[in-house]
Length: 121
Image 1 (cartoon, rainbow, N blue to C red):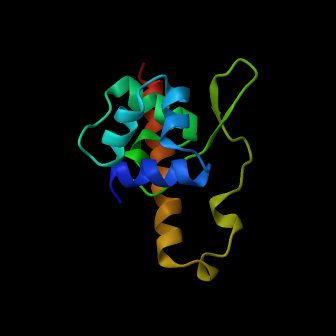
Image 2 (tube, rainbow, N blue to C red):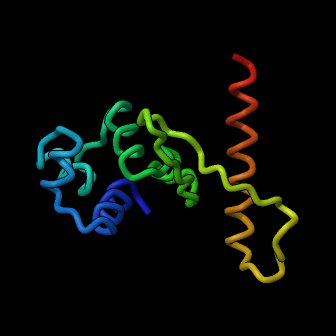
């Protein structure tokens, strides 16, 4: 699924018009329309704003993963990862389709990369 298709889908999940999303992101209706029809692509800052608004990762928007990586906003409005923890071995993998297992493994790799990258700073 392309960026434009994902943006339209996410907007549709919230039952929003292009105009409503444009107001929230402080851009024109035309920009949203061009993103969704893939005439134009958002810059880095706008891509982050879109990801933050829909609580998905930029990797999800860019099609690098199908895992959305939902985030919660804390009281200060900062993103923080959802804190519920489940061990990898606490579920029965035999009951899951292969695609679900792949998504779980992708998420584990995302977390490893995120924290290994942060620790080198």
